[in-house]
Image 1 (cartoon, rainbow, N blue to C red):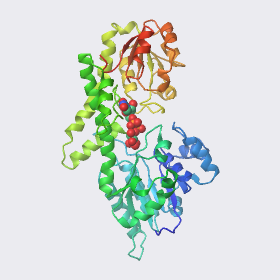
Image 2: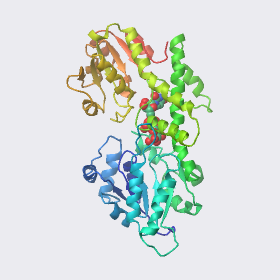
Image 3: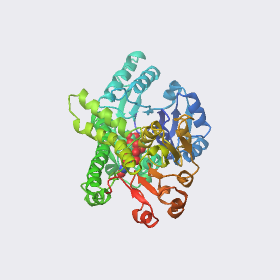
Image 4: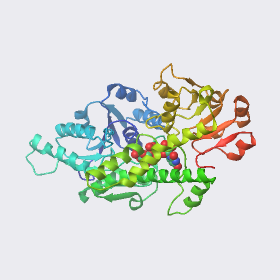
Length: 453
Ligand code: UGA
């Protein structure tokens, strides 16, 4: 494709990655076709409703349905006919052994192969292990044979542009990327990809060299897994230190601050607590470990990272049991259910793991989350001893302790004198170390954080 050819984008898979990506590019002025095979989801999106919680996405969706920069269809063939840059944003869930299941990517590649009759750039955005682009390319190259093209010209190029968006902050991250990693095996494609990102670079007033990081496709695939594995490692590291702090009466938050001020270490992702959850960090860590094994490399260090995180749930529950004897006649308030704030996503939520443990012990719970109440109701039975509260204050009503399990900012903004007055006993177990210790003590609470002795 030369740079003068008008680019039309198609984004396959309109989930947490695909939809914000599609709408981000539409907002930058490109014509974007979203392709979603799930008819109900596609219909909802076409009507301006986002089927998951993600701040800012619905606004962009309605804006660009109106501007006609974005449209939704279910038919792969039609999208392939109309677009020349095809983004693969389908899910790569975990297999039972933890390795990434790339069958949705492969199936999409087969569908694309059967629809392609002119040159396309295929962009692999889904997180996938090293060498996946190679597999996709091999499937797609059969297009040359299938369509009996009589020329020697290439029909497809596969580029890897991994996604670094965070859930709940996807729109923000799209428009303010730390970097955009671009894996190419043919440097002739570079100018076309720069053209694709030119409107974004212009908007954020950055030049190409400070934002776009070019490399080969394998390095790009590894960069994504390595980034998430490193973030998980940082978290498990500080959580391991928090166990020592708890044991000896030190304060892990002070340690985090001290080490994080060194720019070689960095202050982000050093907040100790009940550990990380979500669809990405746990899944990608396991997939990376398996990818290491597949290539004969021992990633035992990452096995430990995983283990430290899994242990958090037990460490937290042991702390609660230690301070509240005979839990059976107690009521616990739970603040926070989603795996992190600003999402209703419960996948691999540490909070939900703790809830299941407490429910199995038949402990009475009053739970609250700003976004995730409906999603949580679907996970538990009516007979389970859970009351779904209307607010943090309502959850605290007549409870023996508050368990803070997700770091929603509104939890630290509560009127703690009032919280104190509605509780039976004033205990707070802060699984996210987010409350102000001095405010709580001044209000008469007993406060237990993670790694705060
Ligand atoms: C993560 C990465 O941060 C994104 O860069 C990446 O694109 C994404 O995975 C993905 O692969 O799609 P996300 O899963 O949305 O993003 O969540 P994070 O913001 O990374 O938080 C993960 C978990 O770490 C949460 O449970 C959060 O509560 C926990 N966390 C985070 C801490 O316990 N302490 C911290 O200091 C920071």
